[in-house]
Image 1 (cartoon, rainbow, N blue to C red):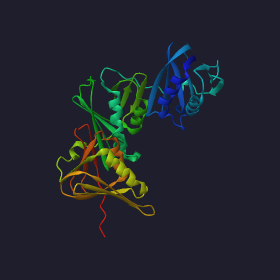
Image 2 (cartoon, rainbow, N blue to C red):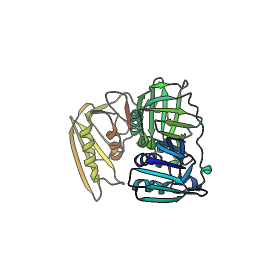
Image 3 (tube, rainbow, N blue to C red):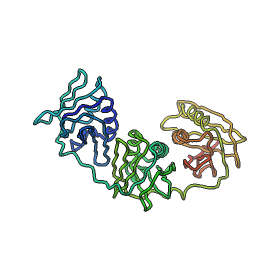
Image 4 (cartoon, rainbow, N blue to C red):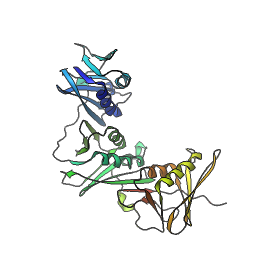
Length: 370
């Protein structure tokens, strides 16, 4: 290969694909980045860890169109440190060495055989649906944090994508909290109902690599592809059944509390400053148009915050994991939020003035008064 590319464009493309470049692998070529020419004016950079793959394109002047695979982490570090306007990529004849020139810097890197790099599975783009890029990013941002980090929990480690009529529903849960978001499709060429689970790592990659105004989502057999202007993300799907989340959402409450989201969030964050990873509980006392927030931990101290609220129904004391509560309130889209409560131990629903976003969270046991 011999090509010249803008350093700015190269950095951006490498940043997009860097999400799935492992530092170590039993298959050494997977730690590399494949660089190949699509045509005389475009190069592609690919990463693939066998569970997920990313292709990023950038404009280039291509003189020779052979492919090279260069050490991924090393190339990422070199690209970030380079200073100049353009980079020349030149694979030296009859060797695995590729030369990179940028400004006054010259690197000669030993790579891997390109033929050993795993190819992407073919996708037929005859059945797909399209959503706005920013809406998909927002949907993942409001749900993926609730997925489980325990790899043994299968479906709970991913984000559910479910298509119903003209809407797309995203949901994630770790068993202690459940986050849901609804977005509208631009078009839909998938006739049957869709329901699949995407790994959380893919959600993180999409939020990082989002380009263009639209995303074409192409479901396959056990696989999925997200196709954007200059970035394509491929992933295997998670097998198993995701919980029927809508059936657990309460619709009636003994107590409903409405408050300013920003004031509530700032109060929780201040009170939680005295918590520790072992003691993250926040106690909420709803009574007489006032909310008292209390956090306490051994060796750190105690913090209290008070704010005005609107309350309907019974006064109630309830406790939550403060970090879980912050995660939810931080991404809620409304000026005011409503909390629907059915006593101290039943799941609590956090919602607003529309059904775009909803969050269910399990309370913790309230401490006994001494």
